Image (cartoon, rainbow, N blue to C red):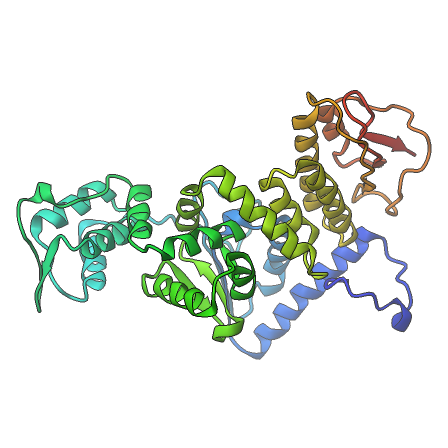
Length: 397
C-alpha cells in the first residue's frame, strides 16, 4: 500500500478502510524504527522541516512514543516559522539557534579562504552586511574572493586599491546572482535545472537542456566546484541538489517568464512520457507553463491519487490548487468543458465513496467548494468544469 503496488492477487483485497490502512502503515513504520533502535543506536536527521509534507510529519510524530526510552536521537531542523504540534511531547526539546557572532563569523571566513587572511576593512564590511546570517556570510565571502578584485598571496588576500573599488553586494540575493552571473555559459544550465526543482537528475536535465554530454558535464562540474549544487550517485545516473533553496530561487527568477514557460512545457512532455511520474509533478510544471486547463485536470488526478494512499491533507491541497486555477479562468469565455473525476472523502468516513447521485446542494463558487472539502462525514465529488456558474462539487450521503 505504501508503495502503491497492487498485491491483491497474491494476498487478496484488504477489508480495512483507507483511514485504518493509514493508521496501520504509520504504526508499522514506527515499529520498524523502534526495532532498529533496539539493535543499535539510531540518529535520525530531518532537515528543512518547514517544507515537510503532512504524511511525513505524521510518520515522524508516530515515532515519538515508540522511541521514548530507546537509544535514539531525532534531530529536526527548521525555520522559526515552522508550525508543529509535537512541541509539548515530553521527549522533545526546542533549541533556538542565534545568528553568528563575530568570532564564529571569522571562523567561517577562515574556512572559505583556506586559512588566508582577508583585509580588516573587508572583514568589517562582511560582518556589518551579513548580520550573522551563516549563508549570507559564506556567499558574500565567496563573491568577494571570486571577484578578482583582491590580490591573492600565499598567506592572504590583499586590497589592490581603495575599498570602494571592491564590489560588495548589499543583499544575499545580489551576492548569489553575482556568483551565478560569473559562470557564463554555465548559467543557462543552472537556470534550466532550477526549473526542474531544488533537486534534479542528470537524465531529466539532459533531456531538457538538449546540449551535448560534454557541455552538460562540464557545466555540472563547474556548478559543483563552485558549491552551488551537490551531487549524489555515479556520474551518468547522478542526482543533484542546489545548495540552498535561495540558490535555486535566484537562478529561477533570473529567467524571463516566457523562457521559464518554455522550459516547463518541455518538462511536461518529458514527465508525461514517463509512466512513473507522479501526477502532482506533471501538474506543477503544467501550472508554471501556463497550461491551465491541463493543470486543473492533473491536480484533480493528483488529489485522487493522494486520497487513495490515503493522504487526505495532500489530497485537499491538490484540490485547493485546482480550484485556485479554476478561479483564474472564471472571467474567460469559451473554455471547453473538462471532466475531472476527483472524489474526496473524510478520514472519518467508513469507506471512500464516490459521489454518484444528482447534486442536492451544488455550489457555484470555488471558494464555497473549498469550504465543502473540509473533513466531515460526507463524501464529495468534483464532477466537472463547465465554465463560469457551473457546479464544481456535489454532495452525496
